[in-house]
Each structure stands twice: as structure tokens, then as C-alpha cells.
Length: 359
Image (cartoon, rainbow, N blue to C red; front, side, top):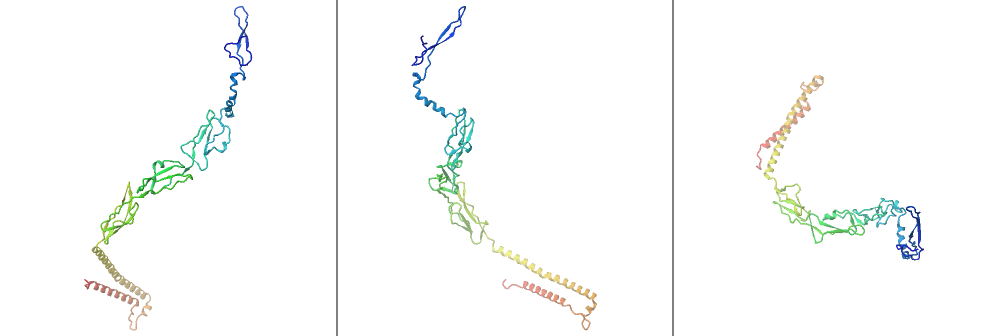
């Protein structure tokens, strides 16, 4: 029996065989068997497959990497300077859609603009993550003579090796062609900012009219005192000026004026007025006793008269041998004091009316 021309030449395989099946007859004839040739089966020993044997281990090795369950992701990948949570760190299989967030190791900080979560995709593979942990420094140092540049001030992460630059503050100017800078060092600290900015000068201030300025320094934030000449006083309670910054320049604050002090004639007029008021007060001191003393004497006499009427025996005891009433000692002392006051008043008026020998 001949083999079908479509069959390849066997390389040592079994002989060809035929498959018979009944052929449906037409008309009156009976159906007879129909022969169909079948190609001989190729075995591993045949020539086409003998050359694939050395490659078999390589073809089977990827199968060992497939997850235990079809459609799941395998163990978590290792990410530099980061670690997964403790509860899933040693898990071998994760279902599709699982999300795991890593955290930075000690002494490392997360870079704000980078992702820290991986996802298990439908192809049973984990998503890729760019390194998101690095050593960093805190906010750059602040110095009085310079201000952090606007570009570096907008940053929120300063990795090791990052250098920031400064611009001189208001009232300061650059003392060299290099701007101040600072670098984040390996120990996560900033290097010292060099003082490359110096204070600007307001120059010697002008002296006010009828005065002068005592200056010890004329640089930014310096303070000077204003002293007026004799007979003049400053127009401000605090006679000082300060070197301050105005936009991109520095200048002294306005000078206080030195105003003339009050004249001697004005002072004399004020003194005379004060003396006149004192004299008026002195006159009142003399007039008041003259009014009060008679009132006191009259009141005392009335009290004595009432006593004499109530106790006539006692009043008779005060009479002398000839039947005359003796003077009251209290009334005598009051009259003596009154006469003394009147004499002092008359002497004062006489001395004021007399012309002064120094006039």
C-alpha cells in the first residue's frame, strides 16, 4: 500500500496503516469499505524532534516561576531603601487588584512627588515603582543678611547633595561675585551659609539748624542722637535718627528740628503772675482769722451767760470784793491772739507799700 503523497517521510517511525469506513451506496448496490491513508505518527526519536531535546529545560524553566494559583501575583518585590508592612511581608500570593504600600527605612525620607504603592495587575505581575526614598535635610537655615531664593523656597524635599542659594536681604549688598549657598550633607545637616552680604551705608547725616548729630555708625540699622544748641530744644521727645531700608536703598529717618526755648521776658511774666496769686492767698490767710475770731468770742460769751443763769451761785463766786465780775482767762488769750494777727497784717501792708531800695 502506498502512502499518501501529503505524508512526510517517516524517519524510523511505524508503518502506515489505513482506516476503513463504510461507504454509503447509491442505488441498489451495497455500501463497501473506503480506505483512507493515515500518516505515520512522529515520535520523539524522529528527526524533527530530536533537535529540540537540548532546549527542553529552557522551555520548562519559566513555568516554575508562575504563581501557585492562576491569576494571582507572587511574593512582593524588593524596593531599595523601603520595606512593605510586617503583616504581608512574607506572603507568597496576592489576588489580582491587591495594593501594598511601602514605607521608607530609618534615616530615609519619602520623595513627595513619587508613588509608594504597588498594584497586582491582571497579568499576574506587580506594577513597577521608581525609588521613592532618599536621605534628606530639613528646611534650609535662615540668616539675617540673606533670604532663600524663590525657586528653592518652593521645594518641599531636599535630598542629600542638594544645594540651595540665597539672595542678599534688604539693607544688604553682595560683597563678592558669588551668592551665598548651603548644601545638604551626608549627615542630613546643612553646611554653614557664608556671610557674603554686607550692610549698606546711609552716609554721614546732615546736622539740623541750631544743633548737631552725634554719629558712631552710618550703616544699615545704625542709630544717631540729635543734640540742640543752648537755648533750643528738639521738636521730638526722642531726638534720634535711624538708618533704614526703603525698597532697594537705605536712608536716614527725618531729622527733628531744634526750636528756640521760651524767652526770659516770658519767664518773668509767668513768675510775676505766680507771685501775685501767692499774695492774694496770703491776704486770705489774714482775713479768715479776722472773721472767725469774733465769731468764736461771741459764741464763748453766750455760753458763759447761759452758765451764769443756770448756776447763779457759781457765777457769784467769780465776783470780786467790790462786786465786779472777773475777766475770763480764755477770752483774754483769744483777744491777745487777735491783736497779734492785726499787728502782723498792718506790718505786712506797710512793707508792701514802701518803695524797694533795689528798684
